[in-house]
Length: 387
Ligand code: KG4
Ligand code: ZN
Image 1 (cartoon, rainbow, N blue to C red):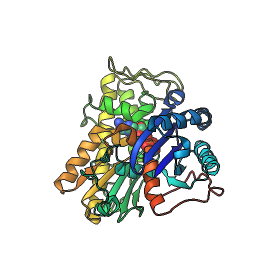
Image 2: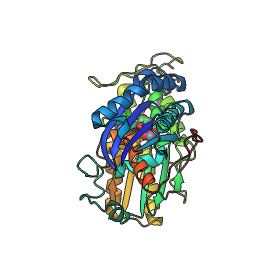
Image 3: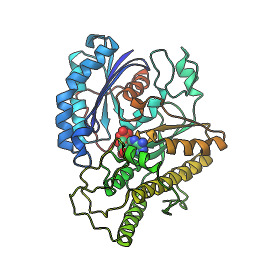
Image 4: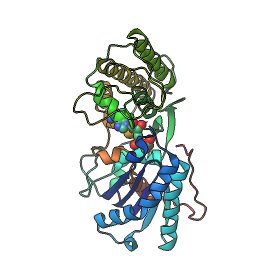
């Protein structure tokens, strides 16, 4: 089965082509440069960019896969969750293609995609996540022994834990009550004047800071459920920044003014315009705040995942979402799970971690095998779709 999938859920225009679950092309055109100066994604800019690029990205994916559009057996598209005006571009294009070429259309949940990135294989039939070392022709039978499993999804819009007893069977057992983890990274980077997206920047700088310098509260540590929360931690970080600023009598940076937080020499990131009023910290203070925040945020993930594997006995945990790029988080989680004899997997391919359509082709492959097609005419984007 040859599948072409489109994902325009946020600020990446992505198109992928697969042969069954074997990825042939996964093209991602990022708009990050266009949104950077605003400190976040601007919907109207995202929409315009998707519209401008979608045709070109489709052509590029087909070319790389060496398929003609007529060869495609199934079309697929992310219909939520995400930005309404951005999703719309992909959904309309996919509907148009499926109608024109009279092929079935699969409507995919973006978060299911982040889980199924772990089931994606390369051209040679090897799983990128190493979830199974040996590829088999009887994939579906063998894959079933992978279950039950837990998936931890940590992205810019979501922080959730999903339990799966078999393919396409999603039970949400924990979720954030306010901000997502990626959002917390982005907001704190903004407070420190480090620009967007904040995750990779904080990770870089946190490595150079003292993780024990500030004792930030670990959110939800004592709650029995598997939910997350990041707004309290975010506020604690903000108060700490103010506190340091007061002590050192540094000036309150004016709203909208460039906040020079003195990035370490030679670092690839430069401070951008910050929209928040912030104190001016020294480089060392900023690095310590970032490091201590990362420690507390990671501790929450560890506490909740530990509770989850105690409640739901599994031998595998899959990770998905942009925040999985973070090596410190991965190392800490792996160590905790290893002690409990649980294997942790994530796609060992950067493209499959952040937003991409490759994970959508894989989800569509499993859905198409079950004939889970949508009614082309009725399909509409669902910005608040939830697993
Ligand atoms: O999954 P993703 O690409 O998009 C959504 O579906 O939201 O996730 C993007 C998020 C952003 O908030 C970004 O700051 C965060 O992932 N992120 C990271 C890292 N790389 C990306 N967070 C922490 N450490 C990283 N290295
Ligand atoms: Zn995502």
